[in-house]
Amino acid sequence: MLRIILELMLLTNHSLTGVVLGLTVDDPAILVPAAIGSHLILDATPHFGIPKLNFRRPKGFIIGSVDFGISLCVLIIAIIAFPGRRGLVALGWLGAVSPDLLYLPEIFLKKRISGKFGDFHSWIQWSETIWPGVLTDAAWGILMIVVILERLGSCYT
Ligand SMILES: [Zn+2]
Image 1 (tube, protein in one colour):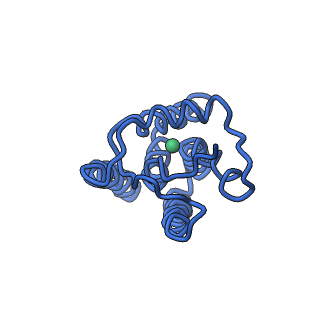
Image 2 (cartoon, rainbow, N blue to C red; image 1 turned 90 degrees about the vertical axis):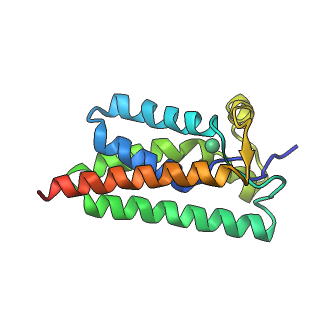
């Protein structure tokens, strides 16, 4: 059975976290596993989710598309804002969002490629709620934005 419900933390928060890691970790061999690990840790913490929201239905598709669009904007803005670290920022972003990208074949092709990793990825998301999930996601997102802005400020002082 396809599991295409919104059973994932907002991609935007994973993106912000990946950017912070890209701004922090210099070695790609450490950055990529750390970014993937950050995704799994965030998914395993209480976070936002709408029960039974299906990405292949209009409401779920719109929410997922907006979230993905914001995530891409986060990447583009970070690459422009931190030109000296653009490769690491892109790598951190990609690592941090990659587990959720495995859902794309399910959404668009009705083909599940995530296998046992997909089972694990779903299993760790034990606590998805609208409330208080939106609060924990907002708190994490704000924290990541503050860190990014702090890094931006230190670039120009
Ligand atoms: Zn996920």
